[in-house]
Image (cartoon, rainbow, N blue to C red; front, side, top):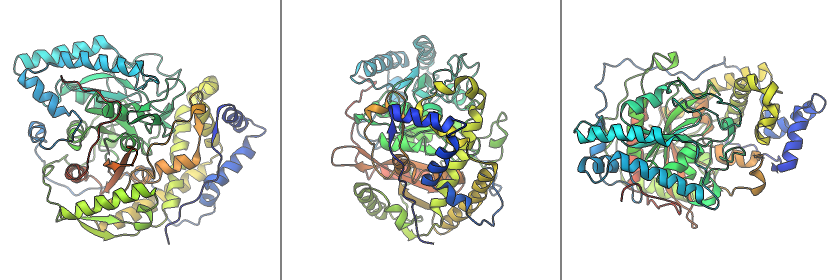
Length: 557
């Protein structure tokens, strides 16, 4: 079957029109008609008309060959090998070197972070990267780290390094609002496992970052906490839903942040903000302490200034966790060949019609990238992946159905307090059936089969991260969000398949448009191949120019 992308003709809605449509969709009288029309526009009718042979796959869990216990990743060696770091960005290795030399202390950097965040809020318009901060808690963490360095006993290469956390992930003492105006009324009692592992390594948690409300959109425009702004152009979206995490890294506030990805929510904002984002294999990183929004497509992962920063974060947060049964069955975490730039033993797969289904500037950047990778010895093979349009629908049905269920405890009392786009999406999800959901899981079985078949012929798949660069923030969307299915598809076109199949994927900078907006590309790997993805992304950093965002600050003098 040839590559086919379903064209979406739904209107772009904001403001009063969006609120009115959301109210109609919620109505017992008119809701059915609204849903039928929008389902037809989105392609749900096509899903309902399919003949399927596959059984359902309720969650994308991947087996692995038994392997002997591997030594833990040597984080110090990984950090100390940081040669040829990306220009214009301070990395965790830069901060660690400054602490060791006495050029700076974690306490001084923590104070500088506060200054920079305050500066970002005084902008016109403000960047709105954080939902919550506790400067006293930050300074206490930094003081403890400074004392460890004074005694010559740092905990590792992330000791004293500022790290931001998406407000979907619990941090003790902070509310977890999910970007809403009413959830998280009490602070979390304990850190999520991923946060606890970073904190145990000495990382300084600097606050909870802004996000698209409940993670159900990909722009980062939040009507309650303000639209997160792209540091490359403040009139552009960051992408979402890990909007503040990616933008905080791009702006220089921290070299590493935690994000969550149910349909591209790490990789899309990383791409639009010109940084690196990794969505690990499903189950690789514990979900304990992350809000249960979309159980079968949810992933936590790192966003960083460089592939090395992401590798350091990944190595710390990945691995089994007794508090999350879904994380227990996995092979050892390894990054043994991270700095091996000889790619001559590897092959990248390209599905040309999919690869080229993006703006001309994005496709051209991909062609330049392929030329550079060929110079590093990476082979290229043409592959085919059938039914990508159907897999998009299967992901859509899966994630909105699960998000609706996650929000049911709040709908009776708080439905009107969600933004207009969230209200509309939840109302539409209420029109989906159990049969729709099961059919989506049957398509997930096919998606896993088709992607793994392509990866049997290539070590990696290369695609754009998004079909275009960061779109403008629509002024009318600021008050209640927006419904823009065409724009949504442009941003999610290449990302959602990784969540549906649970395969690992990494997004990295691949160039810029003529007006300086970042272009991101994506590598998709076989199950549990995060080490290979990070190795290739690290090699790519030596090929691709990096430019500092227009709004960027440094933490070291």
